[in-house]
Length: 105
Image (cartoon, rainbow, N blue to C red; front, side, top):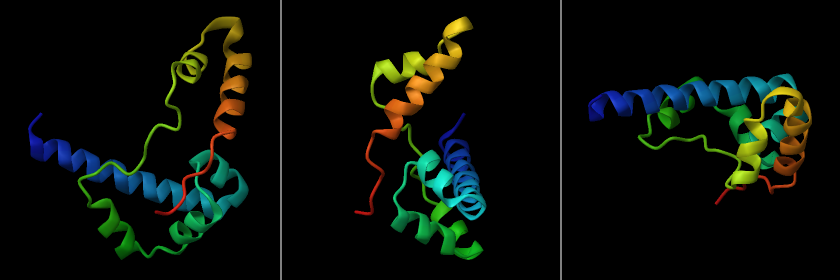
């Protein structure tokens, strides 16, 4: 994969992420704030973006979404198999919910 293909995939991922975020916010704001890991102010901004603004933001060569976990414990819980899957998923959700929401810089 060359550099231009990689950048195009990043732009496509950005647009998909922004469209999904906006859809989630408009469907169920409280759940979206939790699932996206954003604060109310950022949710308001995403909700109000026009299609042209979405396209402009998505065209960045920087990936907009990121992992909400930075430690091995949460990753291990999310990839658990078998009988421990349900309990591990719930435990991971609790740990991620304790993390502060992203704020505007």
